[in-house]
Image (cartoon, rainbow over all chains, first blue to last red; front, side, top):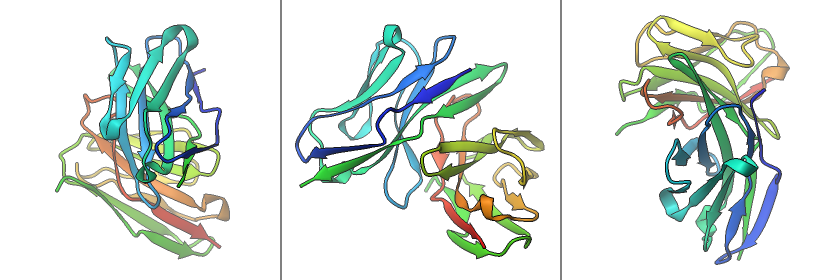
Length: 115
Length: 113
């Protein structure tokens, strides 16, 4: 069965430090992978997506993610975090069937920024 | 401005009292979906719609109804709410051919007493 695991419920980093959020997926075919961000009191916003091609994808707000098929991972990174990055981050995988698709979501990782 | 609008933002109700949460999008998207978000569980899909008059169950449809009579609107109906439906609800939409690129509403925090 398809699944997405985000092993870290919370992560705390200092402002200006680098960040890596982990995401592992279980999916039989080539996955469509996504990272979304949810700022406090807001809906989710797409940060970046991977469909095919270059395994390092760039997103908005200075984020990037790397697809590693051998590790079934799609980790999110940022070289230097800002206080405004404090939010909850969700990884998702889409599985496509006929003309439809369904998104499977991870449980989320809450990012806390220390001043 | 392109957006997905949900109403109300907050709702407190009592067990058994029918309620409707509205969702409207102004981007002419074919695909619309409802999710509930609970701590530690991420997002779980309730229902989705690929187009007008086409709806399908997601992962947790029990206790919910939806309709898609117009392309822009996708209301979520709780005929007889129960406390286990206390949750944060999100509506989302996307163009049909854009897999996974969802536009989300701001959410509706529902409390059922």
